[in-house]
Amino acid sequence: MGYQTSSYPTVENVIQLLKELPEDSIWLCSGIGSHQLPMNTLAILLGGHVRVGLEDNIYYKYGELVKSNAQLVERAARIIKELNREVATPAQARKMLGLSQIPSKY
Image 1 (tube, helix red, strand yellow):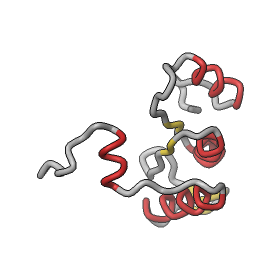
Image 2 (cartoon, one colour):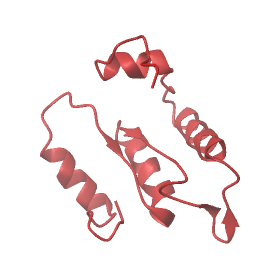
Image 3 (cartoon, one colour):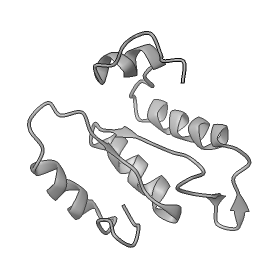
Image 4 (cartoon, rainbow, N blue to C red):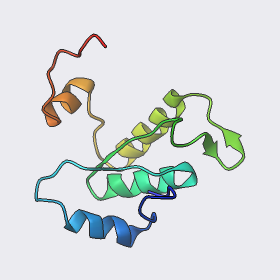
């Protein structure tokens, strides 16, 4: 959400997109740049999943560069826990997505 060719990052747009998904869909919402934190928080509140990373956002907050991907992951995990959700382990995520429990060597 928030990229030049993506949906505009609003609550209304996310909810409309969710209405188009089949029931019991596994979904995530990610935002580009300054939209990353609000879109991730919205996804957590609505029962979805999140994605963070330097490829989408280089700032931790206004005027402060991110030190590492780990800093973004730690913030997302903290928000998830504060909102009474659980962070999936790699094994749980692989199971949700129907992936092999044995990661490829690539």
